[in-house]
Image 1 (cartoon, one colour):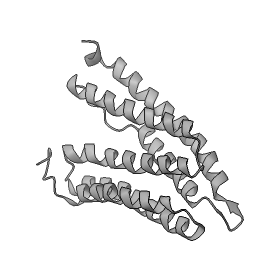
Image 2: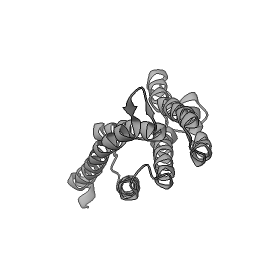
Image 3: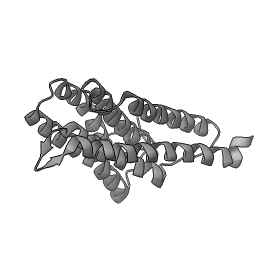
Amino acid sequence: MTGRDGDFWNLPNALSLARLSVTPVLVVLLLSPGRKLSVATAALFLAVCLTDWLDGYIARRTGVETVIGKFLDPLADKILIVTALVMLIQLNRVPAWMVALIVARELSVTGLRAVAIKSGIVMPASRLGKAKTVAQICATAPLILHYPFFGIDFHEVGIAVLWAALFVTVWSGADYFVRFFRSPSSRG
């Protein structure tokens, strides 16, 4: 399997695959919530999320951007973040309706991108889409941490940031649809 400019097996794609492979570990860790384990789980989540920035940086810097990498990178982000949020529902740390809206946006935009490709429209990640991912990470980490530390109620911080993330998530999803329908190729 090769991408546009390089082989599938390169460091950026390996980092994306690593993000995917940590997802089941995250599920297991979130099955046994506790104060100490929440710190380790949040640290793991943040460390893995940093590989999102790192794989893109390496791919651009070394010129090994691949078609599969452009698909795999956002997919790994979506799976990691959505899985964590879904697991947090059972712990009563996030409202299910908020997670449902986030999941609906992710599925809708992924489907739209598939339609766009078939229509010959390239829909790269937008700045809003990247801001959405950062906002979701910034909301999810304190929700995983959950417990008060150093006088900070991380659950309350996480919920406040989740509201902002939800706003950016819906806004960026709407932006993808507007850009698609304004594209001359979508009218044919």
